[in-house]
Image 1 (cartoon, helix red, strand yellow):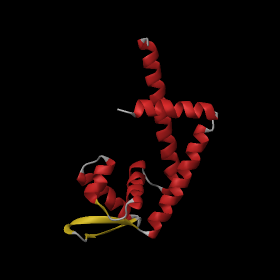
Image 2: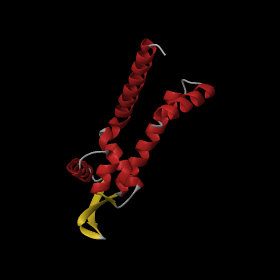
Image 3: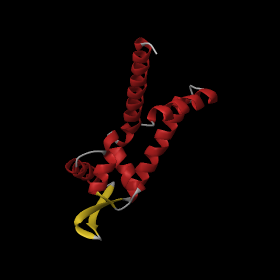
Image 4: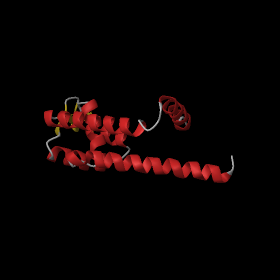
Length: 139
């Protein structure tokens, strides 16, 4: 493949990724959550009783940053902290009823936005794109 073609493909991929991040940020606006906080809420909702260290690992952030994220979510009433029943030195996070409600609303908004984005493609193009992205994602 000529270098110009590879560069063009790389630029297009970056543009699509940036656009998707912008759409995701805009979709979160009604809940006044950052994408980072929304991802953390998704992790805690999917795995109630998540340790802070596990949250940090899931988000690929430092443990101190996970503490700050948990603080922000707790301040909003979306998660609760409790001592880990198996290790009193550790803290676990569980979603509140409000956190579960917000997560469900965010998931629905994100799914609708994703459907709208990919509706621009016909079924064959979506299948081709999925195959190509799986190939690129396999390291």
